[in-house]
Amino acid sequence: MLERVMIISGESSGELYGALLARTLKLRNPDIKIIGVGGSRMRSAGVELISDISSAFGLLEALSAYRDLKETFRRVIEALSDFKPQILILIDYPDFNFRVADKARARKIKILYYVSPQIWAWRSSRINILKRLVDKIALILPFEEDIYRKAQIPHEFVGHPVMDEIADITAEAGYGIGELRTPKLKEIARKAIGINHEGRLIAMLPGSRRHEITKLLPVMTEVIAELSEGGADYRFVIPIAPNLDNKLIALFEPLKVRFANCHIIAGESIRSLLASDIAVIASGTSTLQAALLGVPMTIVYKLSPLSYTLGRLIINVRHISLVNILADRSLDDRTSFRVKEMLQEEAHKDNIIGEIKRLTNDRNYVSEMQLMFDRIRLLFIGRQASLRVAELAENLHGS
Image (cartoon, rainbow, N blue to C red; front, side, top):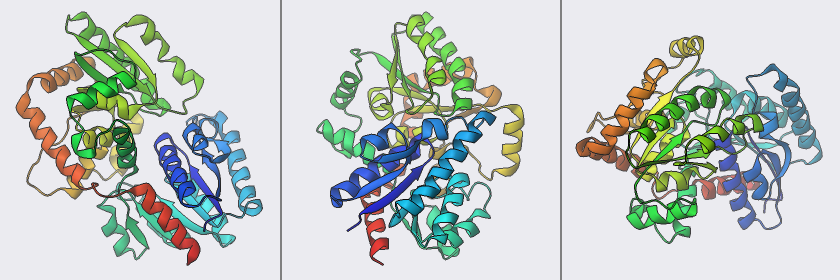
């Protein structure tokens, strides 16, 4: 049985995957000790944290974060020698985790990489680093299998941990994955997040990174203001991503004062989406959450003009959102439908409101979107990512 495991994540979504995995490992290996880098959810799952991502990784865009990041790296390397993990599980975040993997490889520690870096989008040469450093890669996107098969790197598509989180939440309410859009489940979700409202509820998800929140929250505030003044019976819910620093959390406070119909909730993105009729989402994992839950959505994103221009030059994708990338790469050509993405100057109040109204009134449009979501869901149904990754870790230890 596994006794010592280290898990390192660097961002909010990866930290959730680490928490789900830690919980599964502990159920299967009662005497296991898990240490690592994560946040509040990993701590709650029983992980002894070497460093917290809110301090180590949350301000990477600022030079002042460099000392925190350097100190986190020092602690991780020290723990590799002192704790001597039997398995090191690295979750995404390649710029940091590759450096850790290099030190772990020198100590002959088995390395399981969970969530492949997006080599299909940019910096494809990183696959050579993975081939040199890792023992196995647990993939969460089905189209990645072909990439690693060609590179002859041990891998397995395990499914997506978002499905694990959804399954947990729906099972708690007494429902299965096939009953996601039932009115009763929506009612249960609303009560769970403290919303007693039968009218239209719109989820606003401005992302988990500093630049996402500072760019998108003002636009979303304008949308809330105009729709609130228009006389329509709209309510809004904004789930705040876990592990944000206090300065970012403070940006949401004025909305509580200004809008009585706007609910600010710590975490709870799945329940907020389950409770909602429509979602406006910053591109990222939340777009997959909404698709798997069957919530009609529109996608918005903003970067600085320079970052956007450079990104377009080096990133090899037609779309920027995970839900549309999955459709591009994993679905056949039976439908060309894609969720609308409003980027840069297109992500303004009037366009977003226009798309919300279309999602409210155009049944054919929503039906076509739901068909796309149904087909994406089928890519992940029947897989339990956290369980399978736990099994892979156990198998690596026994090999």
